[in-house]
Amino acid sequence: MQLVKHASRLRSREHAKAWLIRCTINFCNSHHRSAWQKRTVGFEDRPDFGQNDLSYEHIELLEAVRQLTPDHQDVIHLFYYEGLSGKEIADFLGISENTVKSRLRRARIELRAVLGEEGDTDGIE
Image 1 (cartoon, rainbow, N blue to C red):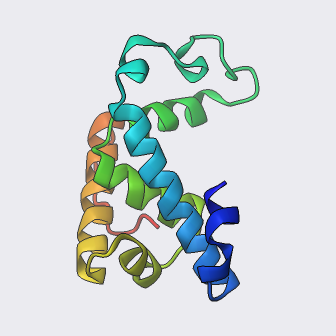
Image 2: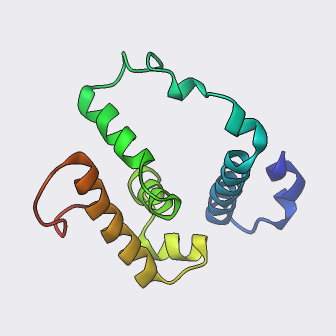
C-alpha cells in the first residue's frame, strides 16, 4: 500500500527497490516492537514449519542469523540475500560504507562463534 501511495515520488527502479526494502525493514522493526508480537508465536517459530524443504545446514544457518543483533541481521540480509553492494547498503541504511564493512565483518565473526567454527573470516563473501 505504501508503494501505491508514494509511487509518484520514486525516481527510478533502483530507487523503488531500495525504498521498498527500507519500508519493509521499518515495518518489521515496528512489528517486532508491538505488544501483539510479544504475546504471539509465529509460524516460523513452530518446530515443524518448513523444515522438510531445507537441509540441516540451511536450518542451522538461519537459526544462527536470527541470533545476530538487528544491525548485523540487516547487513547480512542485504549483502547475501538481496545482493546489494557495500555502497548500496550504506546509502540504503544511511551509514558510511566503512560502517557496513565493519558490521559485515563483525556479523561473520559472530556467525562463526554461534556456529562453533574456528578460523579467519576474511575469506568469507
